[in-house]
Length: 586
Image (cartoon, rainbow, N blue to C red; front, side):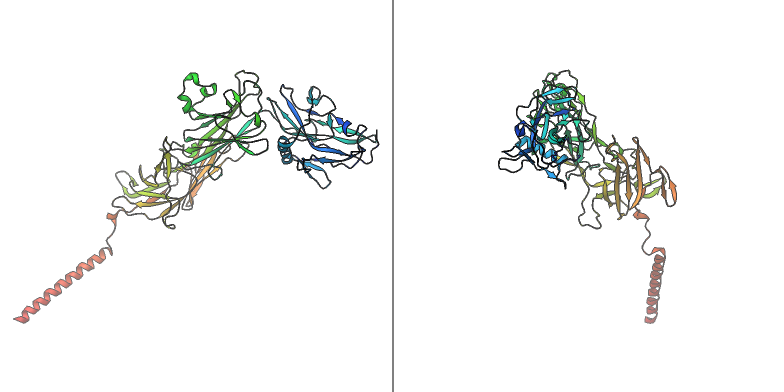
C-alpha cells in the first residue's frame, strides 16, 4: 500500500427526510489506495428495507473523489459537475469546510438527481438477511457520496437516503470506510412510511381557515395525500371518499395537483389520471354498472379514484404529495350554532396490489367543522331565544308586552355612520346554480317579539328598526351585535376545529356566553348583571316601542286650561264692549 501524505477524512452524510442537519467533513489532500481511482471501490448496504419483489435502488453520484490523472494521488472531493463544468448540485459548507445535508438540501438533491443526474450503471443488489436490507453484490461503488433512490415498494414508502464511501486512516494506511446506512445508526435516521395518509383543511376565498361562515358562502376544501404509494400489481386501490353533511352542497370543481420529477407543479387530468363520482350520479346507474367503490357510497359522499379503468395512475408520483381541492356551499339546511356542519374524508388503499383479496385499508377519518349562528330563536327552542325582544305596552290579556310586526334591517356597517350602509344578506343556490336571495336583510318581529335571523358567521352586525307597527313610534337606536367563537386548536386532538363556546355581545355588553360540553350547551354558568348573579338564564335586551295613542298632548293639560280660560275672557270682553257701544248709541 502507498503511504498517505496527509490525514484524509470524508465522513458520509446518511440521512432521510426528517429535517435534521447532517454534516460531511471536508477532506484534506492525500493518496488513494493501491488500486487508485479505478480500483478503490467498495460495497454499500442499506438496512431497514423489507425484502420485496419489485424493489429497485438507484445510486446517483453527488460528490466524487478527484485524483491526479498521472500519479492517481487523491486530491479532493468535489461536487459532480454538469457538461459545462458548473456544479450539478448546490451544497453548502459550515465554518470548518464540512458539507451540510439538511432536509431542504436533500429534497433539492433528489429533485435534481431524477431530472439531470445519471445513476451508476450495472449495480446489482441482493438482500442481506443479517443486515435487514439490501447490499451491492460486489465492491463496485467508487469513492464518493451518493443519493439512494428506493422505488417499487408497496408495503412501505422509503424516502431519499445519502450514503458515502470515503477514505479514512487505519494503522497508518488509507482504507475505504463507511458505505453502510442503517436504521440504528446514530448519525442517520431513515424515515419509512407504513402507509399513505390524508390531511384536510377548510378555507375561504382569501385562503384563511374557516371556522364559521354565512349561509350562501363558498368554502374551499383541500385534501392532501402524503406518501403516495407505488403499486406494481394487478389489484391497486387508492381512492378518497369525502362525506359532506346536509348543510353543505358540493360544487363539481375538483382540481388535483402534484409535482413532477423536476419539482414543478403538475395538474392531473380528470378521467385520465383520476375520476370523480358523486352519490347522486351513482344512484342513476344500473346496479350492474357500478364499481364496488361506487356501491359503497351513501348520501352526501364523493368518490375520487386514482385507479382508472383498472390502472393505477400515480406510480410516476410515488413518495410525493398529491393535493385535491374543491369547494362547497353552506346551504339553507345548515345546522345552527353548536351543531356545526362537518366534512370528513378517508383514504382507502392497499398494502399489496399483487394480491386481489378484496380487503382494503382505510385511514382514520379527518374532519373539518364549519359553524353558523343565529339570534333570537331562528330555530324553535334555540338557545339564543330572548336575547333581543321587541316590546310595546303591557297587555293584561296575554300578560306580555311582546310586540310582533316591527320591521328591522340588519347591516354589516353602522347605518348612522356610513351612508348607504351595506345590508347583510345570505343566499341559497338552485340546482342549476342560480343564486337566490334567502335572507334579504330585513326581519319582522314575531312569535313573541323574536327576530328570526339565522346563518350568521362570526363578526359584528348592526340592527336598526326601520318600520314600526301601526300606532307605535319608531325606535331609532342602532344595536351593535358581535358574535365570537372559540375552537379546539390542538393539532393532536381528534376534535380539532370543534366549537368550544361562543359569545353574543350587544352594545358592548355580553348578553350571553354559550359553552359546549359534550354536545350540550350551557348558558352563562356564572354571570353577574347589576351586581346580581344570574345562572343559566338568557340575559335579554328589550327593544321598546311607545304607542302613539298614549302620548300626552303638547304642553300638558295645564296649558289647555289656560287656553280655554283666555278664550272665555276674550269672549266676555268682546261682549261687554259691544254692550257699551249700544248704550252710547242710545
